[in-house]
Length: 251
Image (tube, rainbow, N blue to C red; front, top):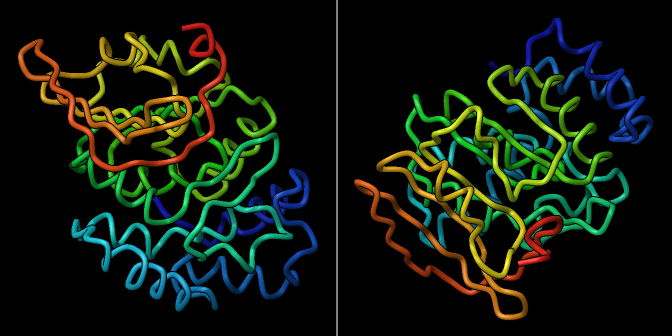
């Protein structure tokens, strides 16, 4: 599902037209990187250091998650003027008042989902598309919803350009989920509502897990697990996410 040589030209066109890259990388350098299928470019060492020092040392152990974090080129999901900071241990702005989470949080939330190769996943808050790309490395089907239309369109183009045919992006309010494709083995929310939207719990499959930051000022990363209709809630760590907008603001 990863980068194919025949996708090089189309992805370059996407970067140029969407503002995701354009002239920030020399054309020859970009072609060489893409032809190496995303994992062997000059930033591979930075990704390895990111995984080793920021993620493994904090206790993330899932080998598939770690490999996905090594593989997906995070810097290509970040605005050109911030790409030198792409592998730092902090979130970064991606425009429209939104951010891309720090690498550790992406890895932790992904690990908490306990995905299998056959899993079906719903993501609320596509943002840059980076988290969706990581999920697409691990699951059979990824459905992602973004309320900010320019981000939605750009992420959709970028994911398609990278060859993630198992990832679909919809522009809309994630509060309501994506009911026609439910149920989901995993649901991940990358913006914080004051409390979990009931439609998301309803769309969780039996045995599924929902990972979500909750709270307005004081936020906790929470895991909901459903078994035979019963939902159990577990707090993991304190976090700080942008607030969930749309219907969630009116709760």
